[in-house]
Amino acid sequence: MVNSKPYNLLDYDIDALADLFEANGFQRFRSQQLIKWIHQKLIDDFDQMSNIGKALISWLKINTTISPPPIKHQQISQDGTIKWLLSSAEGHYEMVYIPEKKRGTLCVSSQVGCALACKFCATGKQGFTRNLSCHEIIGQLWLANRVVQSIHGKDRSITNVVFMGMGEPLMNVGPVFKAVGLMLNDFAYGLSKYRVTISTVGVVPVMKKMLHKNGPALAVSLHAPNEQLRSNIIPLNNKFSLKLLLDTCRDYTRTTNREITFEYTMMHDKNDRLEHADELSNILKQIDCKINLIPCNPIEDGIFLPSNKKRLIQFQSRLQKNGYHVTIRKTRGDDINAACGQLAETFLKTKKSLVRIET
Ligand code: SAH
Image (spheres, rainbow, N blue to C red):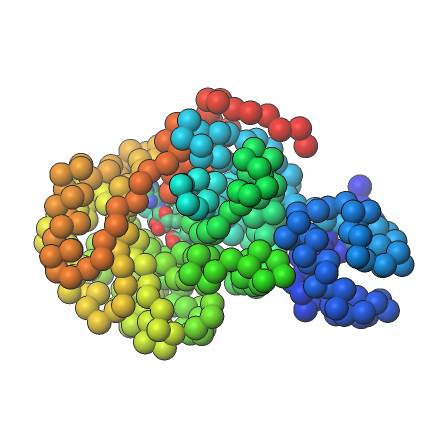
């Protein structure tokens, strides 16, 4: 069926919506009001938008929709983590909500699949299908907030967003940054720029364009302390070398005065020895950063295994001794395969604690 309503309002930021209103004979400032209803109050029923005039409401009803991606499945872990599978005609994608005492983090996808084929990543194994559009990205935050508030009440909402789900966000720049703009905008979600994080494997030309102070936080998936090891596990390193990536990171931190988080997935006997920690310490000198160690989550082929606890702690201590701020990522949602690098339509493979949502 052809959708007779041409505009999905989740594709619009404040300026684009003001342009649309103006082009159709309405006042530009209505855009702010509408964005508040949609993204702050999470309302999708035009009749509830009490401060919007009747003429605009009837135009909106005829010409627009507020359509987030349909939820295909929702799984809730024993630790409160929630994972959703979202539908699209060309394939599915996933998002994960991770509750903590004082914050709630949503891990969002930017693409269906991924073209970059990192060897240890389940999404990478799946290949690339397509980029997500803005409504599919911001729609994840909109939907997750609605579900979380329906479970925990209106006071609970998502405080942090990380682009660490499926896909490479810097290969889908337009929709990703439009959605990020809404996340940071006070009329929409008003999240702190320190609490919205783009994670990239190192798309250098795009990183060079991110040199402004008020953008989202940047995380870089490093995973190896030298060119050879990195090229073995991350094919993109053959295009944008580790040296080029680190030079770009150094420029970024100096120009923006923001720090970078380096993600380092700890893989048993591949990159987790003390000499790797020393090598890593050397290459990160002069970059304002912290390091986040992620115990590798095994995927189906079983080639990359997690480092054992002793190595993880030793590696962390060595980096700390060398002067770095190092955290170890807690794995959450284990029982529902919700961890980093495991997102690849796993709903289709497991029926554990599956909750079906009517769509
Ligand atoms: N493409 C982006 C974001 C998606 S992946 C990026 O690479 O940064 C988010 C994080 O999970 C990345 O640091 C990625 O390297 C890591 N990751 C992928 N597979 C993993 C696995 N099997 N175990 C642990 N972390 C993994």
